Length: 437
Image (cartoon, rainbow, N blue to C red; front, top):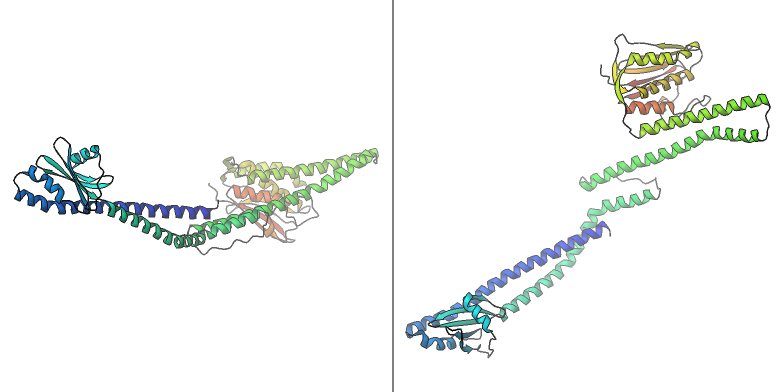
């Protein structure tokens, strides 16, 4: 059952329930008023006669039976009961209807004195040694009740139809954004990524929901597109080494190589396997960083990190001018040390890869940024640096994931990665952070 139908049913239930409840209480109030009027009418009829007989006759036992006869009218009948509870006289209504009242009911009436029974209104007057019970018809009241019920039902039917139509219209209008979002969700579930989410002009909760949903859909689309591109690039990156290894395996089965050639083939297969292993490790690192697993944040001495990296990359000084600029006053920063060193390793290795022999590579800290700068080939589109699998120099070995990992580590560490590069001049990649000294 849709939300629209549920809302309409809820409205109708509340509407019909409230009308029924109002009608019931109104009927109770009108009935109570009519009952009081009936009793007041009976008092009005009997009191003048009772006063007359009291003034005219001194002995009430003498005129009790006469009074029981005289109070009778089209609306009033009477029953005279003695002290022992025995019915002495019954007088019918003027139309001849004799009230059928059981002895038990008579006793209850004498005890209560005034009220409404199942069929009659009653009132008890003491006349000497007798109880004069006056019975009033309720037919007219019953007729009024039936008319009220009929009229209420008629009004309910007459009002409910247009009220239901109005409710249907306004509920549809109110739930229109929800219906739209439902349709968008269905299209997205079918894989239609070309869905454009309209901007809502409404400022109510549904408008805010549309805005939030539009933002979520855009993020979802970007994630899906990223996943597709990611899978395509991974498949492409793994295809080359796998194809090479598969081809060599077939040739090895056919004994196509000499002993000397086999050594070179084994070495090439190992290199391709290492290339795949490195790619898988890089992908695993990206997945860990994307999964928001908490980092191991600790105090890190920047000079100590520089010293460890200088020792680790001492070998590049045989072909490059690798300069590490230590700080006169050490800086302590709070981050995951291993991830931070991984980011700087990627930057140093990139610099080494894209510089020629004898060119300069510098590692330093300045203006709140740790930077790796080189005088290599530079980049034509530095704004694309950090995109997954993006590579400009296709003639160099690489996966295009190095700077993506650096960017993710910077983001997770509360840093920003800034890439400045000029083709043929060099590149500087800075990781900037508000360090706590």
